Image (cartoon, rainbow, N blue to C red; front, side, top):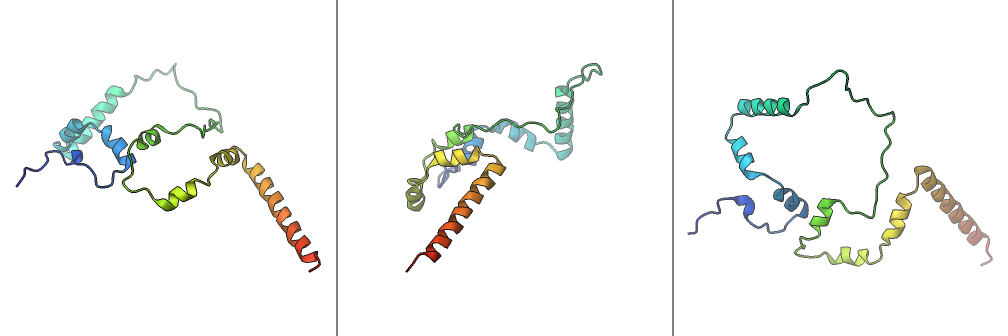
Amino acid sequence: MSAPDPDPAKRPLLFPDPVIEFYMAKIDRPALREQLQRTPEERLHWLEEKMKSEQPAEDSSAREEPPPWPARKSKIDMGVDPAWFAEARAVPLLVPDPVIEAYLEDVDRGLIRQALELSVTERFERFHRLMKSAYELRRACAEAPA
């Protein structure tokens, strides 16, 4: 009988999940083990002390003003993958799904990005024009001689 692996987190997964793999690489296991040896009261005290040490001394003359309402959100760049997704690509899937692979060949990501750049109003206007064309086509087909 072989000895059990001392750290179960280092055992390979049967089906690796890229998101889990990303976060597992960022975990400080010794600090986690140290926290788990403490009682809940000790953990709370440790957390309060950490918050006090990281909290800057509040100066009444240097207060941060709230952002103007409503806060403007920055535009999302759809061409750049988030860091976790870029790292997740490095983990190969054991069994690629042939159905998903077949559909991915026909997906035009450029059209999706273009549609996501439109405002909600522009999307509704585009949908309205599409439906108007569909009704006109249906009417023309119904009026056409058989």
